[in-house]
Length: 315
Image 1 (cartoon, one colour):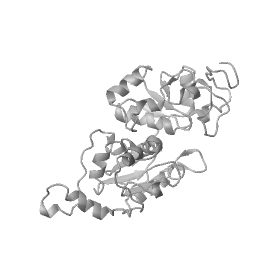
Image 2 (cartoon, helix red, strand yellow):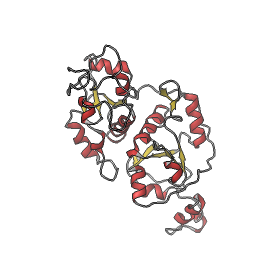
Image 3 (tube, helix red, strand yellow):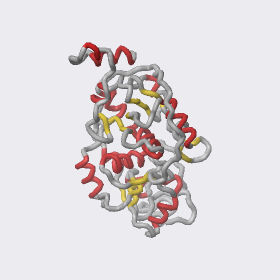
Image 4 (cartoon, rainbow, N blue to C red):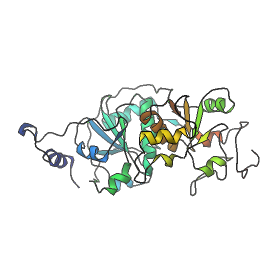
C-alpha cells in the first residue's frame, strides 16, 4: 500500500506546479457541497494537513482489512458513546478522542464508513453536538463507492499529531429526548416526527429487521409520526439523491421544513443519517432521537400506533 508521503508526491506531480511547491501536500479545496465531499475530491486531498479522515464502520475488521489512506479508526460503540450509561460520549472523553485524531476547530473532518454511512452519520451528529458542524463532511457514497471505484486502500494506522481540542459541554439542541417525542405524540407540541425505519417496522409487523436482535417489547410507531425509509434518500451507488429530489421525497410525506423535525429509528443510527440530510443538505431544523424505538417501545403507559396489530394487538 502507498504511504501518505508517496501518495502526496504522486498527487503533487499529477498536474503542473511551481517547483518550490512540488513536494508540498495539496491544499484542501472547497467541496462541491457544504455537507458532502466526493470520492474524487477526497483522493485529491488525502495528504492535505487541514483534512482529517475518520472511518466509523460497524462490521468488525473492515478497517483493518483496508481503509482510505490516512484514515483513523473510530468505534461508534466505544469511542462515541458512554459504555455503561446509554448516552453519547462525555465531554472529557470526546476531547481526548478529538485530540487523538488530531482534530482542531478549523480542521476539515471527512467521515465515512460501511452500511451506507449510517454510523459515520452518527459520528457527524455527535461531533456537531461538540461544536464541529460546518467543517464536518460525509464522503458521498462511503466505503461502498470508494471501493467500487477501486481507489487506494491502506492497512496501516496513520501517525497523527495530537491536537489541543478543549473540553466542551455538548449542546442539547440537536438531540431529542423521550419527553420531547411523548409531547409530540400527545399533541402537546407542534413538531413532526420522521420515522425512517422500514414499512414493516413502522406498521408493527416486525420489531426489528431480519437478523437483528429485538430490543423492544412492542411493535409499531410513535403516534403522529410519518414514515420515509432512509433508503429512499440514497442512490444505488450509495450516494445521496440531489437536494431537489430529497425535498420532493420528504415533502410527499408532509416534511417541508416549516416545522421542527425529530428523526427516529430503532437505536438512532439510521435516523442520524436522515438527520444529516435534513439539517446539513436541506437546511431544515431537526433533532435526532437516539433513544428511538428501543426506548419508546419499552416505555410504560405511553401511546403507540400498531397498524399491523400483530404484536400486543389493537391500535
